[in-house]
Image 1 (cartoon, helix red, strand yellow):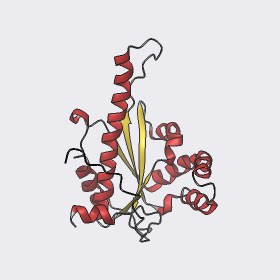
Image 2 (tube, helix red, strand yellow):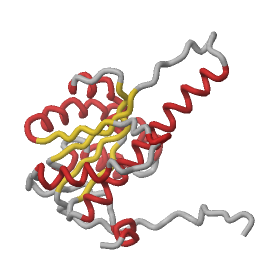
Image 3 (cartoon, helix red, strand yellow):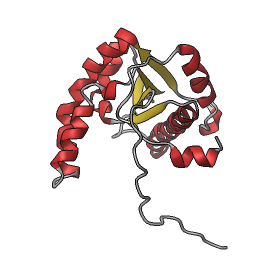
Image 4 (cartoon, helix red, strand yellow):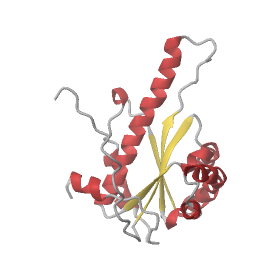
Length: 205
């Protein structure tokens, strides 16, 4: 599969087969995804793959995000209650995805905003933003590599509403949850959503 084809045919899948994903299938995908770009090549990220009973227990923890997600969805789709309902239903079990891949970054020490220098304030924002960008690049690599391997993913940020509870369950401290990827063998083939407009400008050509 060529890269252009992978980019254009990858879909967010919300219904998965019950077939488990073997570690020997998942491991090269995650290892290759680590070749993502990052600020000064610091590679400030951590990836955690969860399956089996640990996955089931984690789903119960993340299920708490629905109370916050419902409000967000109702705000985003005030005239489309069916979208709100179907999205919330997905968060009951993440479409049966057998694997959840969590992507974390280290939480930089927050400055004393009242007494910090301008540089200290900007440095905090810069560090957090660039770490997030690197982690997002890594996560996108996972979606493309999984697609190439015949798997599917769904990029989720809803569970970040309860990131403290998730991190506590995993025994993580000083880390910030960026996203979670539901991963498994697809049980649906979503159609391609249209691209919105042409948000590209060319200057000096």
